[in-house]
Every structure is written in C-alpha cells, then in structure tokens.
Length: 179
Image 1 (cartoon, rainbow, N blue to C red):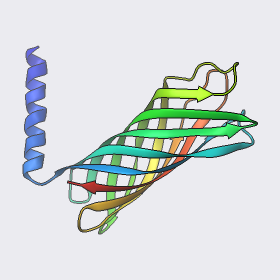
Image 2 (cartoon, rainbow, N blue to C red; image 1 turned 90 degrees about the vertical axis):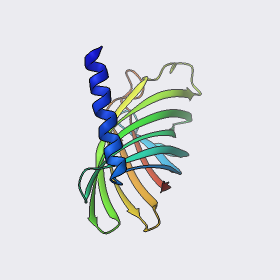
Image 3 (cartoon, rainbow, N blue to C red; image 1 turned 45 degrees about the horizontal axis):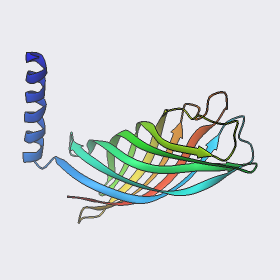
Image 4 (cartoon, one colour; image 1 turned 120 degrees about the horizontal axis):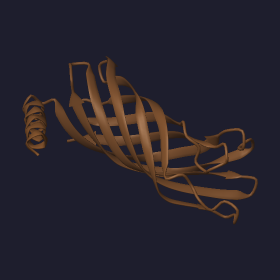
C-alpha cells in the first residue's frame, strides 16, 4: 500500500511539474471514420462510414517529441454479401508524436478497442471478440491557435469474430482543439 501511494505521489508530482512547464495539454477531437475489414473471409466487402469523438492528453517529452494517450468512441463496421455488420468501440491509444516541421507531426503507436456494442443481421454470427488489438499511423497538423487536424489509419491485428478471418481497417479524419 505504501508503494502504491509513493508511486502515485511521484506520478502526480511529475504531471504537475510537466503542466507547470507548459508541457501537459488536454484536448478533444471529433471526426469521421471510413472503416472496413481485411482477411481471407472478407473478399468483397464495402466499408461503413461512422464517427469518432475522443479526448487526448499531450505529454511533452522534448521540444519535438511527445506522447499522446487518447480515449475515443469509434463507430465502425462493414457490409459483406448482404450482411450488415456494425461495431462500436471505446478505443485506447498510445501515440508517439514527433514534430517533423513546425506544426506537422507524424504519429504511431498501439491501440486497444473495447467492443461496447456489435450487431449483424445473420443468425449464425452471434458473438464478436470483446477486444480489438491493433496499431496506428497518423499525421497531425496543429495550427498556431491550438486547433489541430488529424488523419489516422488503424490496422487491427486480431480477428473480430471467432473462426472468421476479419480484422479492422479504419481511416479517420478528425478536427480537435487543445486547451
């Protein structure tokens, strides 16, 4: 218990110190998803358009490098041979962010999507995997007034439905603001 309190105090002081130096920023974003799937069982699929809304923390490590934990709601899915699959996730991301030129940064990192609701209009598909493990690559441009545009591509590494080779693919375009 003492170790937990000590670690919590260290983390709190670290975040307070970062915030005092102007290195810790909070933000929110919203945008559109263009999602689909990839896999041996998904040859002629059509994507689904959905939305994405989330919160981000930008933790400055150096002048050019930061880490951005993100939590977002992401509406995804696809259509396949008459099937209409819908999947809603709470997505947790850990982005490494490197500013290549003033305002423009490249990002990459892991993501975990927690399935909060999924549906399909076919009786023999009854369950979806509860988590989706994947990775992401992104480009982000931040304007001088802390408004940003993010273009992100997510790649799922795990199957979405048991015994069905299908992994998420998602392109999102978001507009956000740091506070």
